[in-house]
Length: 440
Image 1 (cartoon, rainbow, N blue to C red):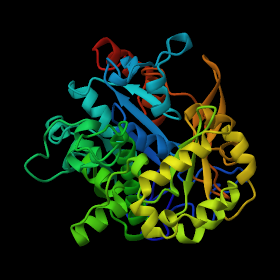
Image 2: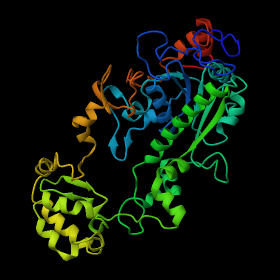
Image 3: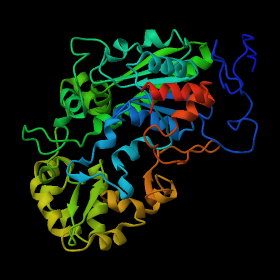
Image 4: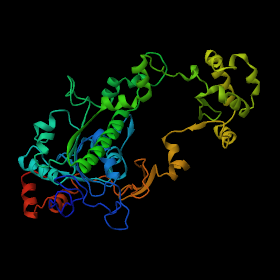
């Protein structure tokens, strides 16, 4: 396919020019000339040389957007395939499937290669040469030592977008330090976000991997856009440390500007008792999110049939409610514990003067009508496990919708397909590679 911008001849299945990055499918409205609606990254090929969670999250999000993602695994497989327990919860599914691996690698293909074998490295370099994106999440220096660092890969494809995931970023004295989610959460200060203000760090549930994966996919998308607009490939870096700091958002922004960080919140001493959560008679919880407490205080008193509280001098103004917050939380606790949560929900539903919500857990979400209406959780008929539910990347596109198309691949499932259809190897070549222990 010839590029209108630089006149280069490209491979027939190319969506972007290998020389200048110009789109070769302009005017197709994201459907490549057909009426079938595909994801916005349809036609983009991603080499996914990642493991565990950080890297796989980023590439799975690209796959959800329609990219062809080829997961490159060692002959032993991604270690996540053997990760059978997470925080005490079993990850084993029917048929020996691993839910940890499944929920991070759907939509992908898998090729198993010994990259320490020169012929295996040759396969990888050929694959990079025919791809748009290359993503790795190894400790800084590992990819370079194997001949797959950025400077190595661009020799085979100068237009590639090379995504690199690390614990601490590409520069600095700790750039090569080993890292997992908890190290990033610790270094970033996030362990002091939650829990009472007692000086003790509290776990935030391994969010560093997920957040950093989101940031890396965001960076890759920017790299693809720059390639299309400017005709350049480049390296994109994301880290646990930087990503969780960014998640600190307003909290960190204020602290840096004023040297005054927002305090951790102990619900029994919430500075604004109308920005708090309360237990109901059935053991379930309800939350209120009313930041302008002077505005909303009369409405909540009326809604809970306690207008007598409006005459209590301790609670008459925002400043007073802050001063007597412990007493007010105790009063509200004594009120909300008298009814079940759905009774309170019935009372507040339709009242636009009360900003409230149920405090849910993960098992409430599949039946939440709002979750279902927006496809935040989708049903998928897994060929081995049967009917399953999956978290979908929470984005909506009117013309190029996301979809869950396939389960995570079996180890090396697509090795022969990729070698033959993408890289032009023959069956004799494959037999030789197998006999030499280069591929499965």
